[in-house]
Length: 386
Image (cartoon, rainbow, N blue to C red):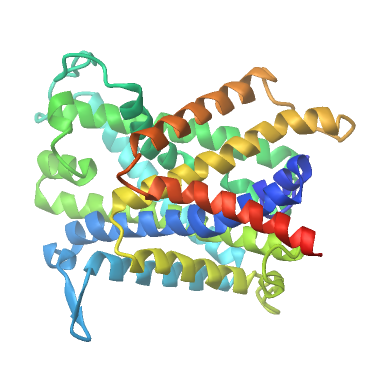
Protein backbone atom coordinates (compact mmCIF):
# COMPACT_ATOMS: atom_id res chain seq x y z
CA UNK A 1 0.00 0.00 0.00
CA UNK A 2 2.93 2.35 0.76
CA UNK A 3 5.88 1.05 -1.31
CA UNK A 4 8.52 3.53 -0.21
CA UNK A 5 12.08 2.98 0.91
CA UNK A 6 12.48 3.40 4.66
CA UNK A 7 10.09 0.74 5.88
CA UNK A 8 8.34 1.14 9.24
CA UNK A 9 9.15 4.83 9.48
CA UNK A 10 6.75 5.61 6.62
CA UNK A 11 3.91 3.60 8.15
CA UNK A 12 4.38 4.98 11.64
CA UNK A 13 4.41 8.55 10.40
CA UNK A 14 1.15 7.98 8.54
CA UNK A 15 -0.54 6.05 11.38
CA UNK A 16 0.66 7.80 14.55
CA UNK A 17 2.10 11.12 13.46
CA UNK A 18 5.60 12.55 13.17
CA UNK A 19 6.62 12.28 16.86
CA UNK A 20 6.15 8.50 17.05
CA UNK A 21 7.78 8.01 13.65
CA UNK A 22 10.71 10.18 14.72
CA UNK A 23 11.18 8.20 17.97
CA UNK A 24 10.87 4.81 16.28
CA UNK A 25 13.16 5.88 13.46
CA UNK A 26 15.87 6.99 15.86
CA UNK A 27 15.42 3.79 17.89
CA UNK A 28 16.11 1.86 14.69
CA UNK A 29 19.10 4.08 13.93
CA UNK A 30 20.59 3.87 17.44
CA UNK A 31 19.70 0.32 18.46
CA UNK A 32 18.08 -2.03 15.97
CA UNK A 33 20.30 -1.87 12.92
CA UNK A 34 23.62 -1.00 14.59
CA UNK A 35 22.82 -3.60 17.27
CA UNK A 36 21.98 -6.23 14.66
CA UNK A 37 25.20 -5.53 12.78
CA UNK A 38 27.28 -5.62 15.94
CA UNK A 39 25.61 -8.81 17.23
CA UNK A 40 25.93 -10.83 14.03
CA UNK A 41 29.45 -9.61 13.28
CA UNK A 42 30.61 -10.52 16.81
CA UNK A 43 28.93 -13.94 16.53
CA UNK A 44 30.67 -14.63 13.20
CA UNK A 45 34.01 -13.49 14.57
CA UNK A 46 33.58 -15.44 17.83
CA UNK A 47 32.38 -18.79 16.46
CA UNK A 48 32.91 -19.17 12.72
CA UNK A 49 36.29 -17.49 12.19
CA UNK A 50 38.13 -19.47 14.94
CA UNK A 51 36.56 -22.73 13.72
CA UNK A 52 37.67 -21.90 10.19
CA UNK A 53 41.10 -20.38 10.77
CA UNK A 54 42.21 -21.60 14.20
CA UNK A 55 41.57 -20.78 17.84
CA UNK A 56 44.25 -18.07 17.85
CA UNK A 57 41.66 -15.90 16.07
CA UNK A 58 39.72 -15.67 19.32
CA UNK A 59 42.66 -14.50 21.45
CA UNK A 60 43.02 -10.80 22.43
CA UNK A 61 45.49 -8.61 20.58
CA UNK A 62 47.49 -5.67 21.94
CA UNK A 63 47.12 -2.34 20.14
CA UNK A 64 48.90 0.78 21.44
CA UNK A 65 49.52 -1.04 24.68
CA UNK A 66 45.85 -1.88 25.21
CA UNK A 67 44.37 -5.41 25.04
CA UNK A 68 41.69 -5.46 22.33
CA UNK A 69 39.09 -8.19 21.84
CA UNK A 70 40.02 -9.92 18.58
CA UNK A 71 36.37 -10.88 17.78
CA UNK A 72 35.33 -7.23 18.24
CA UNK A 73 38.20 -6.09 16.01
CA UNK A 74 37.31 -8.59 13.28
CA UNK A 75 33.63 -7.69 13.63
CA UNK A 76 34.58 -4.07 12.92
CA UNK A 77 36.41 -5.09 9.74
CA UNK A 78 33.38 -7.14 8.59
CA UNK A 79 31.04 -4.17 9.06
CA UNK A 80 33.38 -1.81 7.20
CA UNK A 81 33.80 -4.26 4.31
CA UNK A 82 30.08 -4.87 3.81
CA UNK A 83 29.31 -1.16 4.08
CA UNK A 84 31.86 -0.52 1.33
CA UNK A 85 30.17 -3.20 -0.79
CA UNK A 86 26.78 -1.51 -0.39
CA UNK A 87 28.40 1.86 -1.11
CA UNK A 88 28.98 0.80 -4.72
CA UNK A 89 25.38 -0.18 -5.41
CA UNK A 90 22.33 -2.25 -4.49
CA UNK A 91 22.68 -4.36 -7.64
CA UNK A 92 26.18 -5.55 -6.70
CA UNK A 93 25.26 -6.18 -3.07
CA UNK A 94 22.07 -7.94 -4.21
CA UNK A 95 24.03 -10.40 -6.34
CA UNK A 96 26.37 -11.10 -3.45
CA UNK A 97 23.30 -11.59 -1.25
CA UNK A 98 21.89 -14.31 -3.51
CA UNK A 99 25.23 -16.16 -3.58
CA UNK A 100 26.06 -16.08 0.14
CA UNK A 101 22.49 -17.04 1.07
CA UNK A 102 21.71 -19.80 -1.43
CA UNK A 103 24.93 -21.84 -1.19
CA UNK A 104 24.80 -22.46 2.61
CA UNK A 105 21.04 -23.11 2.50
CA UNK A 106 21.36 -25.80 -0.19
CA UNK A 107 24.31 -27.61 1.43
CA UNK A 108 23.00 -27.49 5.00
CA UNK A 109 19.50 -28.55 3.94
CA UNK A 110 20.79 -31.55 1.99
CA UNK A 111 22.95 -32.56 4.97
CA UNK A 112 20.05 -32.25 7.42
CA UNK A 113 17.79 -34.37 5.19
CA UNK A 114 20.54 -36.99 4.90
CA UNK A 115 20.94 -37.10 8.69
CA UNK A 116 17.21 -37.47 9.26
CA UNK A 117 17.04 -40.21 6.62
CA UNK A 118 19.45 -42.28 8.73
CA UNK A 119 22.60 -41.57 6.74
CA UNK A 120 25.24 -41.25 9.50
CA UNK A 121 26.03 -44.01 11.95
CA UNK A 122 26.68 -41.39 14.65
CA UNK A 123 23.09 -40.18 14.84
CA UNK A 124 20.90 -41.11 17.78
CA UNK A 125 17.17 -41.85 17.53
CA UNK A 126 14.97 -38.79 17.70
CA UNK A 127 13.73 -38.52 21.30
CA UNK A 128 10.32 -37.68 22.57
CA UNK A 129 10.46 -33.87 22.84
CA UNK A 130 9.17 -33.84 26.41
CA UNK A 131 10.43 -31.35 28.96
CA UNK A 132 13.62 -32.78 30.50
CA UNK A 133 15.92 -31.81 33.34
CA UNK A 134 13.45 -29.72 35.32
CA UNK A 135 10.81 -30.31 37.93
CA UNK A 136 8.41 -28.04 36.08
CA UNK A 137 7.98 -25.41 33.44
CA UNK A 138 10.00 -22.19 33.73
CA UNK A 139 8.35 -19.00 34.90
CA UNK A 140 6.88 -16.47 32.50
CA UNK A 141 9.82 -14.11 33.00
CA UNK A 142 12.29 -16.82 31.92
CA UNK A 143 10.15 -17.59 28.87
CA UNK A 144 10.10 -13.90 27.94
CA UNK A 145 13.90 -13.71 28.04
CA UNK A 146 14.13 -16.92 25.99
CA UNK A 147 11.79 -15.33 23.45
CA UNK A 148 14.15 -12.41 22.75
CA UNK A 149 16.91 -14.33 20.91
CA UNK A 150 14.24 -16.22 18.94
CA UNK A 151 12.65 -12.91 17.97
CA UNK A 152 16.10 -11.70 16.98
CA UNK A 153 16.64 -14.77 14.78
CA UNK A 154 13.43 -14.09 12.83
CA UNK A 155 13.83 -10.33 12.79
CA UNK A 156 14.85 -10.12 9.13
CA UNK A 157 11.42 -11.27 7.95
CA UNK A 158 10.41 -7.69 7.04
CA UNK A 159 13.70 -6.50 5.54
CA UNK A 160 12.28 -6.24 2.02
CA UNK A 161 10.05 -3.30 3.02
CA UNK A 162 13.09 -1.09 3.61
CA UNK A 163 13.96 -1.14 -0.10
CA UNK A 164 10.32 -1.22 -1.27
CA UNK A 165 10.86 1.89 -3.38
CA UNK A 166 13.56 0.04 -5.32
CA UNK A 167 11.60 -3.20 -5.94
CA UNK A 168 9.83 -3.92 -9.22
CA UNK A 169 6.07 -4.50 -8.97
CA UNK A 170 5.96 -4.12 -5.16
CA UNK A 171 2.24 -4.92 -4.96
CA UNK A 172 3.06 -8.44 -6.18
CA UNK A 173 6.63 -9.02 -5.02
CA UNK A 174 6.54 -7.60 -1.48
CA UNK A 175 3.83 -9.99 -0.16
CA UNK A 176 5.66 -12.89 -1.83
CA UNK A 177 8.95 -11.87 -0.24
CA UNK A 178 7.46 -11.39 3.25
CA UNK A 179 5.24 -14.47 3.44
CA UNK A 180 7.45 -16.75 1.37
CA UNK A 181 10.65 -15.71 3.13
CA UNK A 182 9.17 -16.22 6.60
CA UNK A 183 7.75 -19.65 5.68
CA UNK A 184 11.05 -20.75 4.15
CA UNK A 185 13.12 -19.62 7.15
CA UNK A 186 10.72 -21.38 9.54
CA UNK A 187 10.96 -24.62 7.55
CA UNK A 188 14.76 -24.40 7.45
CA UNK A 189 15.00 -23.79 11.21
CA UNK A 190 12.79 -26.80 11.92
CA UNK A 191 14.76 -29.01 9.54
CA UNK A 192 18.18 -28.01 10.90
CA UNK A 193 17.08 -28.30 14.53
CA UNK A 194 15.65 -31.77 13.86
CA UNK A 195 18.99 -32.70 12.31
CA UNK A 196 20.91 -31.44 15.36
CA UNK A 197 18.61 -33.36 17.71
CA UNK A 198 19.12 -36.49 15.61
CA UNK A 199 22.90 -36.15 15.96
CA UNK A 200 23.22 -35.19 19.64
CA UNK A 201 19.91 -36.05 21.25
CA UNK A 202 17.92 -33.40 23.04
CA UNK A 203 19.91 -33.41 26.34
CA UNK A 204 23.26 -33.47 24.51
CA UNK A 205 22.38 -30.57 22.22
CA UNK A 206 22.27 -28.12 25.14
CA UNK A 207 25.96 -28.60 25.91
CA UNK A 208 27.64 -28.64 22.48
CA UNK A 209 27.98 -24.87 22.02
CA UNK A 210 27.80 -23.82 18.35
CA UNK A 211 25.75 -26.73 17.00
CA UNK A 212 26.56 -26.52 13.29
CA UNK A 213 30.31 -27.01 13.47
CA UNK A 214 29.98 -29.46 16.40
CA UNK A 215 27.62 -31.64 14.33
CA UNK A 216 29.98 -31.56 11.35
CA UNK A 217 32.92 -32.63 13.51
CA UNK A 218 30.97 -35.50 15.05
CA UNK A 219 29.68 -36.75 11.71
CA UNK A 220 32.61 -36.20 9.37
CA UNK A 221 35.71 -35.21 11.38
CA UNK A 222 37.80 -32.06 11.79
CA UNK A 223 38.06 -31.02 8.12
CA UNK A 224 34.28 -31.04 7.72
CA UNK A 225 34.11 -28.70 10.70
CA UNK A 226 35.96 -26.08 8.65
CA UNK A 227 33.68 -26.58 5.65
CA UNK A 228 30.54 -26.09 7.74
CA UNK A 229 32.10 -23.11 9.51
CA UNK A 230 32.71 -21.54 6.09
CA UNK A 231 29.09 -22.18 5.05
CA UNK A 232 27.74 -20.69 8.27
CA UNK A 233 30.05 -17.70 7.86
CA UNK A 234 28.65 -17.16 4.36
CA UNK A 235 25.09 -17.33 5.72
CA UNK A 236 25.90 -14.80 8.44
CA UNK A 237 27.55 -12.48 5.93
CA UNK A 238 24.32 -12.67 3.93
CA UNK A 239 22.31 -11.56 6.96
CA UNK A 240 24.80 -8.78 7.68
CA UNK A 241 24.70 -7.59 4.08
CA UNK A 242 20.89 -7.42 4.09
CA UNK A 243 20.98 -5.52 7.38
CA UNK A 244 23.46 -2.96 6.04
CA UNK A 245 21.29 -2.48 2.95
CA UNK A 246 18.00 -2.12 4.82
CA UNK A 247 19.11 -0.04 7.79
CA UNK A 248 20.72 2.69 5.69
CA UNK A 249 17.39 3.35 3.97
CA UNK A 250 15.85 4.43 7.28
CA UNK A 251 18.28 7.30 7.72
CA UNK A 252 17.72 8.22 4.08
CA UNK A 253 13.91 8.25 4.47
CA UNK A 254 14.14 10.27 7.69
CA UNK A 255 16.49 12.79 6.09
CA UNK A 256 13.88 13.49 3.40
CA UNK A 257 11.46 14.42 6.23
CA UNK A 258 14.19 16.42 8.05
CA UNK A 259 14.09 14.04 11.02
CA UNK A 260 17.74 13.16 10.34
CA UNK A 261 20.59 15.42 9.26
CA UNK A 262 19.73 16.58 5.73
CA UNK A 263 23.04 15.26 4.45
CA UNK A 264 21.70 11.74 5.15
CA UNK A 265 19.42 12.10 2.13
CA UNK A 266 22.38 12.54 -0.21
CA UNK A 267 22.78 9.86 -2.89
CA UNK A 268 26.07 8.96 -4.48
CA UNK A 269 26.16 10.64 -7.92
CA UNK A 270 27.32 7.46 -9.66
CA UNK A 271 26.00 4.55 -7.60
CA UNK A 272 22.72 6.09 -6.40
CA UNK A 273 23.19 4.76 -2.85
CA UNK A 274 22.60 6.70 0.41
CA UNK A 275 26.29 6.86 1.27
CA UNK A 276 26.05 9.19 4.28
CA UNK A 277 23.35 7.04 5.90
CA UNK A 278 25.37 3.90 5.13
CA UNK A 279 28.56 5.08 6.79
CA UNK A 280 26.68 6.73 9.68
CA UNK A 281 25.09 3.36 10.43
CA UNK A 282 28.50 1.66 10.30
CA UNK A 283 29.92 4.22 12.74
CA UNK A 284 27.10 3.58 15.24
CA UNK A 285 27.60 -0.21 15.01
CA UNK A 286 31.34 0.17 15.56
CA UNK A 287 30.56 2.43 18.52
CA UNK A 288 28.52 -0.39 20.10
CA UNK A 289 31.43 -2.77 19.54
CA UNK A 290 33.75 -0.27 21.22
CA UNK A 291 31.73 -0.55 24.45
CA UNK A 292 32.94 -4.16 24.73
CA UNK A 293 29.41 -5.54 25.21
CA UNK A 294 29.12 -9.31 24.88
CA UNK A 295 26.90 -11.12 22.40
CA UNK A 296 24.05 -11.83 24.87
CA UNK A 297 23.81 -8.20 25.94
CA UNK A 298 23.88 -6.95 22.34
CA UNK A 299 21.07 -9.32 21.38
CA UNK A 300 18.88 -8.34 24.34
CA UNK A 301 19.43 -4.63 23.64
CA UNK A 302 18.59 -5.06 19.96
CA UNK A 303 15.64 -7.41 20.43
CA UNK A 304 13.97 -5.12 22.96
CA UNK A 305 14.15 -2.23 20.51
CA UNK A 306 12.73 -4.51 17.80
CA UNK A 307 9.78 -5.39 20.02
CA UNK A 308 8.94 -1.71 20.51
CA UNK A 309 9.05 -0.69 16.84
CA UNK A 310 7.63 -3.98 15.55
CA UNK A 311 4.61 -3.76 17.82
CA UNK A 312 3.89 -0.19 16.71
CA UNK A 313 4.29 -1.12 13.05
CA UNK A 314 1.92 -4.08 13.23
CA UNK A 315 -0.73 -2.09 15.09
CA UNK A 316 -0.44 0.53 12.33
CA UNK A 317 -2.23 -1.97 10.09
CA UNK A 318 -5.28 -1.64 12.35
CA UNK A 319 -5.08 2.15 12.57
CA UNK A 320 -4.61 2.70 8.84
CA UNK A 321 -7.53 0.41 8.04
CA UNK A 322 -9.74 2.77 10.05
CA UNK A 323 -8.12 6.13 9.21
CA UNK A 324 -7.46 5.55 5.52
CA UNK A 325 -10.13 3.11 4.33
CA UNK A 326 -10.02 4.44 0.77
CA UNK A 327 -6.36 3.72 0.02
CA UNK A 328 -5.77 0.96 -2.55
CA UNK A 329 -4.80 -2.28 -0.80
CA UNK A 330 -3.14 -4.76 -3.16
CA UNK A 331 -2.83 -7.20 -0.24
CA UNK A 332 -5.28 -7.54 2.63
CA UNK A 333 -4.16 -9.00 5.97
CA UNK A 334 -5.53 -12.46 6.66
CA UNK A 335 -7.80 -12.95 9.71
CA UNK A 336 -7.94 -9.21 10.29
CA UNK A 337 -8.06 -7.82 12.96
CA UNK A 338 -7.14 -10.89 15.04
CA UNK A 339 -3.72 -11.57 13.51
CA UNK A 340 -2.27 -8.12 14.25
CA UNK A 341 -3.97 -7.97 17.67
CA UNK A 342 -2.50 -11.34 18.71
CA UNK A 343 0.95 -10.16 17.60
CA UNK A 344 0.66 -6.88 19.49
CA UNK A 345 -0.68 -8.51 22.68
CA UNK A 346 2.02 -11.18 22.82
CA UNK A 347 4.80 -8.67 22.09
CA UNK A 348 3.60 -6.29 24.83
CA UNK A 349 3.46 -9.18 27.30
CA UNK A 350 7.00 -10.29 26.44
CA UNK A 351 8.35 -6.73 26.63
CA UNK A 352 6.77 -6.15 30.06
CA UNK A 353 8.01 -9.47 31.46
CA UNK A 354 11.53 -8.90 30.10
CA UNK A 355 11.70 -5.47 31.72
CA UNK A 356 10.52 -6.89 35.04
CA UNK A 357 12.97 -9.81 34.93
CA UNK A 358 15.96 -7.50 34.38
CA UNK A 359 15.08 -4.96 37.07
CA UNK A 360 18.21 -3.86 38.91
CA UNK A 361 20.56 -6.02 36.81
CA UNK A 362 21.16 -5.59 33.07
CA UNK A 363 20.41 -2.02 31.88
CA UNK A 364 20.60 -2.86 28.16
CA UNK A 365 16.91 -3.81 27.93
CA UNK A 366 15.87 -0.56 29.61
CA UNK A 367 18.18 1.49 27.40
CA UNK A 368 16.20 0.65 24.26
CA UNK A 369 12.97 1.89 25.87
CA UNK A 370 14.74 5.00 27.19
CA UNK A 371 16.00 5.90 23.68
CA UNK A 372 12.42 5.77 22.37
CA UNK A 373 11.02 7.90 25.20
CA UNK A 374 13.80 10.51 24.91
CA UNK A 375 13.44 10.77 21.13
CA UNK A 376 9.65 11.16 21.43
CA UNK A 377 10.03 13.90 24.06
CA UNK A 378 12.74 15.65 22.02
CA UNK A 379 10.52 15.77 18.95
CA UNK A 380 7.65 17.28 20.94
CA UNK A 381 9.99 19.92 22.37
CA UNK A 382 11.37 20.78 18.92
CA UNK A 383 7.85 21.14 17.52
CA UNK A 384 6.92 23.41 20.42
CA UNK A 385 9.98 25.63 19.91
CA UNK A 386 9.19 25.97 16.21
